[in-house]
Length: 441
Image (cartoon, rainbow, N blue to C red; front, side):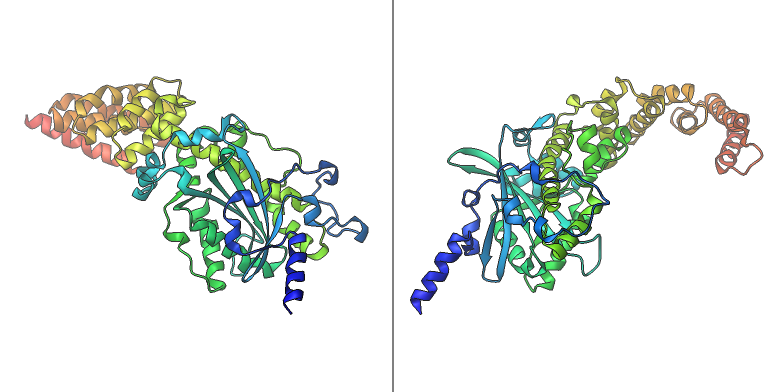
């Protein structure tokens, strides 16, 4: 009996099956994936056949020979490692750039003080590829993770991809992921707070496995990206940010995210993994892009004067002002010195004026309101602020009347005098009150 068991274990080792999930944790036990043989990749076409002829079927192990089938107590899972030197150039940035900054700079912005106690080496980057967008039956058939580690060959960044050859591999995937999480403190994701983490948490629960994913410190890069770059770049999808911000252009073998679920379904039906190689590539680049995007976010938050564009300074200053951040005034003043479009220039002055007013420095905001009033043809917010200041702060009623009348003229000249306008009603009421006060004085 013992001889048969020894023979079985020897066969498993020859097949690349590793016994014991604990053996997986140091990344050196997994061979880095060699370059994909691009001759095996057909030109991508969404209209391609869903099924392959038997003689054309290419198994996953042949296309991705760096991967290994890892056996656990609850089954096995296909695992692939990609290892990057920290000096690796990804678009315009190096992976090492992120380690110059601390998650602490993001703590007040994402309102998670726990980020301040750790280094990015303590965090696990995470991204999933799924069988759909929502619903109890949605699976994460691929979970990509990334982490910094030290090795005999020096510091490096490892992208590890766990893949379900079929749905029965899910318990093994979750177990391996949980063991890797045991060595990390928090998470870095892109829209993971709303999608990846709740999905994985649900899968842990479905498999009756405990998890603390939702309770961990978490830097979700989607929200900072929108706050910092939406005004300048518009779309803040990760793929859009790669081209417009990170200087990265993906190779031809990438695949659009909307097509990925159907490619996995086709793989389950046919066993042909050629199109799945594109999915591995897509997930791999997502993981590495999160590193350089996190570097951009933390650099801008900690070094506003190094911003790539004054519009980014305006976005940061507004975010700082909304949060009551001490650096808001300096950032907004820096933005005002740049070449902002007129509308954003006025909004920047408006934010700065409100900030000064809240801090009891309304007199310093006076020239800002005047600049806005002199350059606007629609918005009367600055006129109102000037009228309030002259009425209540310095009791100069004639100046208060002047700015109220200017605001009324702006509204009426805009052709809106015949329609109901609550702002006009407020201005007319204010003007009548000011005229009475002036007469009484």
